[in-house]
Amino acid sequence: MAMEFLARHCCLFCPFLNKTSPTTLRALASSASGNGVSNLQVAARECPVMGAAMAVQSSRSYATSTTTPLHFEQSSPSKVNETSIDSVHAKAGVFDTSKGICKHGLAVMNAAQAATGENVEVTPAAVGTPPSPQKCHSNVFHYEDFYQAELTKKHKDKSYRFFNSINRLAKEFPKAHTNSEKVRVTVWCSNDYLGMSKNKEVLKSMHNVLNKYGAGAGGTRNIAGHNTHTLELEATLADLHSKEAALVFSSCYVANDATLSTLGSKLPNCVIFSDQLNHASMIQGIRHSSAHKIVFKHNDLVDLENKLKSLPIEVPKIIAFESVYSMCGSIAPIEKICYLADKYGAITFLDEVHAVGMYGPRGAGVAEHLDFKAHANGRPENTVMSRVDIITGTLGKAYGCVGGYRSDPLLLALFSLPRFLQQSWPYQKTTFTDRAAQQLNTRYVKAKLAEHDIPVVPNPSHIVAVLVGDAAMAKIASDMLLERFDIYVQAINYPTVPVGEERLRVTPTPGHGPELAENLANALETVWTELGIKRVKDWEAVGGLAGVGVKDTKSTKPIWTDAQLGLAPVTGVQADKVVVEEESIYAIPIQAAA
Image (cartoon, rainbow, N blue to C red; front, side):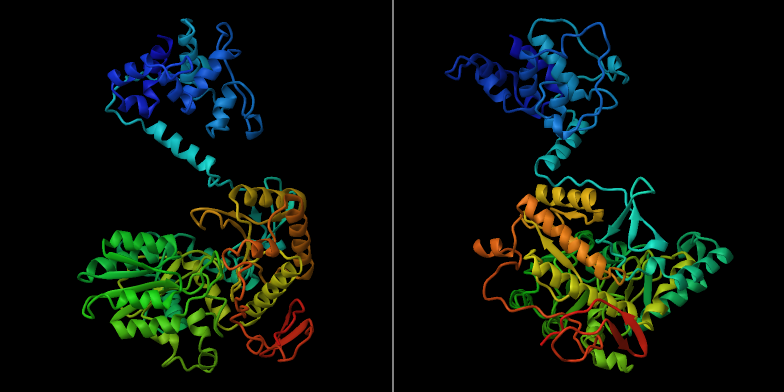
C-alpha cells in the first residue's frame, strides 16, 4: 500500500506512471521479484525520483521536521554523496537550490512521508515559493519535467556547458579580467583572430562615426532605408571577393540560414550537398529550405562525386561547404569542388567565416589565397575565387566587429547594419602585418606543443586543436589552466565536436608573443602530466584519433608558405624581424620548412 500511495502521489512527475495503466501498476505492485520486494519496487529503484524517495524513506533527517520551515543553501557537485534532499538534486544534475526545494525534491519528501504513514506534507509555500495547484491528468504534457530531464541528460553525458566571465581589455590585448577587475588572464581562444577589436585606427574612426550618426541602424531597409556607410561597406566587400555585389546581415549565421533557405526553396526540386562537418547555420538553412539534403564525407571528393552523379544533370544542385573548419582546422579542396560543380551542373556555396581577414594577399579568404600572386597583382579573373558562385563571411571574427555578409550576383537588400561597422575591412585589405604575425605565432605554438608531445589535430590553418578525448577531462583541464595559470581556453564538447573527440581550441593572434606561448606550453605540460591525459604516443598506441597518432600519414604543411610570409627559403631559425612589403613585423622565431 505504501508503494501504491507513493506511486499515486508522484504521478505528476513521472512519465512512466503517466503512461502506465492502473491495472499494470497494480500487477507490478502485487507480483514479487523473488527477493521479497515487488516488481514495482524493483522498477522504482531505477527511477531518479522514486529511487531517491525510497532512499529518503530510510534516512529521514530532512523529511521529519514539521516545526521549522525547510531551507537548503546552494549545493555543489562535491555533495553528491550526502544522504539528503541536496543529494537528490545533485544526482539529478540540479546544483542550485538557493531559491528553495524544487518540485522534484518536494515530491520525494512528501512521497517518503506518505509511504511511512506520516500525514505531514511540505508545500511550496513552506520553502518560500507560491503554491501551484496541479491535477494528475495523464494527457497533460509536463513541460518543466521535460526541461529538467533534458538538462539532467546534458549533465550526465558531460555535454552541459559552463561559461566563465571573461572581459577582454582593449588596452591590454590579449589580456582580460574575470569577475574581479583585479584578476588578469590571458585569452587563448578568441575568434578576434587579428586583434582588430582594439585597433587604434579602427576605434578612432568608429568614434567619429558614432559621434556624428549614433549607434543604431534605425530598422531594416524596409523601414529605415539605406545609409551611406552600409552601401560603402557592401561595395568594399564585393570588391574584396571580386563579385558584382554584396549584402550585409546581422550575422553570418543569419546570412547562411537566409541564403540557403531561400535558394533551396526557390530552385525547383533543388538538392543540397552538404559537407559532413558544416556549421549549424548552414544545416539550419538547408532544413528551413525543405530541399532534399545529401551529406558527403568531410572533404571527400570521391564520395561527393559519387553522390553528384547519382542525380540527373538537369536537377538544380548546391554544394555547400566551408573553407576553414574551425574545430579541426582542415581546409576544403575548393578548386576541385568547383570542378565537380561544373561537371555535374551544380553551384557552389562557400562559407569563408574562419578565413576572411587571415588568408590571401588582401584577406579575402582561402579562395583568394589559392591564387596568391594573381590577386596580389590585381588579376582576379579566371581564379578559384572567381569560380565560386556564392561566398559568405563574417565581420565579427578577424575583422573584430559584428555582422555577416554574402557576396554573389543575385542579391535582394533587406538588412542594414549600424554605420560604425565599416572601418576594419579597408584596413585589412591594405595591411599585411597582422596576417603574417598570426601565422608565424601559430607555427611557433604548434612547434612548442609538439616538443611536449601534446596532441594537436594536424591541419594547415591557424587553428590549434588540442585533443583531449573526454568531455569531463576537457572541462577539468580548462578549469585548471584558468585557476592555476591564468590562461583561458574554452573546452569544446559535443555537439560541436563528436563524442570522444573533445578538445581545447587554441587560436594564437598577433598579440601572442614568445613569452605567452612559452607560458601556454609549460602550463599544458603540467596539466597533461597531472591529469594523465593522452599524449601523441598514447594515441599512436591505440591507432590514433582525429588525425592524431595515425601511422603513415603525410605531414601537413601550412597553407601560408615561407615565401608568402617573406621568409628566406633556407633551413634554420629565422630572425625575429621579418620584412614584408616595406612593413616591419615582429614575430616569434620559427623553424622554416626545409
